[in-house]
Length: 169
Image 1 (tube, one colour):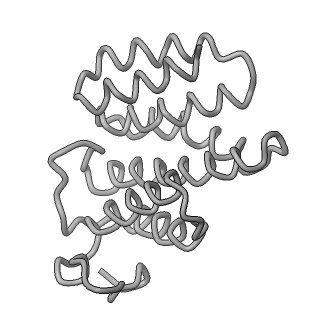
Image 2 (cartoon, one colour):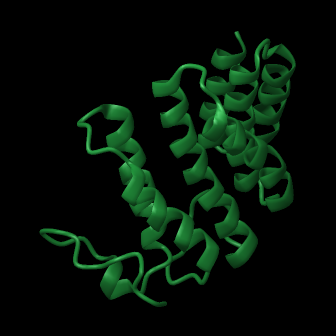
């Protein structure tokens, strides 16, 4: 039930219903029965806090979730995806911490957030080329967030990537 409630909280976050999302995520955290589910819910709680403009609360959830998914031997395929998704969410938290941009619309471009840029650039290199829906969505999310940190000419889509995350800002 905790996983379902956490996904519901994500839906509420995307609708901008932050108070309701907070209630759902708190219930999910209380219902998580095992460390894997606890880390998964904490990862979702972290991006909610980044959307609410609370960088330190976001990091308080995301850092332990990232460490868990990076080191667990439980459910290796799922843990790998969850680790990468949590790294993306850390990028969102650092965007807030460094540039003051909460992880919610309207997203502004041309921001300066070097740690977020490094995290997202490294993440794009780690995402498997598997043509699965979850990895395709993660790649799109990471590239979109990274585009906010690049000069406008470098963030524009073209027939192929003409920019590198290593390009200085």
